[in-house]
Image 1: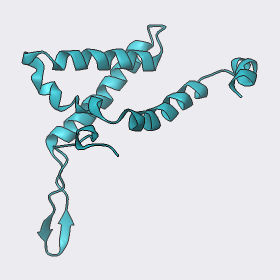
Image 2: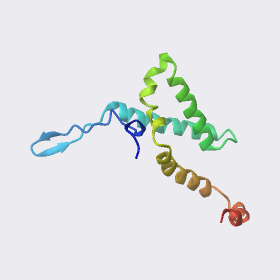
Image 3: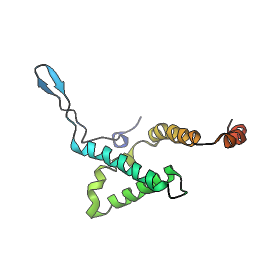
Image 4: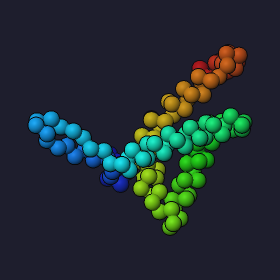
Length: 123
């Protein structure tokens, strides 16, 4: 059973529902929205840069993530630590979430000739 330290807690994602005539409305923190926007923007930027390089998309995303994680350890950039807490989630959870997506992306862009030559080894 995972301990409390292994769980990823989103501190900025609170749903403080307020009552307005019997209806509920959820309020989202601007930090959460900013993180999602920044993550999508970084992914789009990496995809744009990828057009000019032979490096695979997922490898370049990993390098960008490592750079952001290293920058968060610098005292001047300590505000990034709030957004790098995802690195402390349970490794099995990360495997179950991201591995199928990465395998699908690689399989989706594979050409038919390569697929036919490697299907015997894959099965």
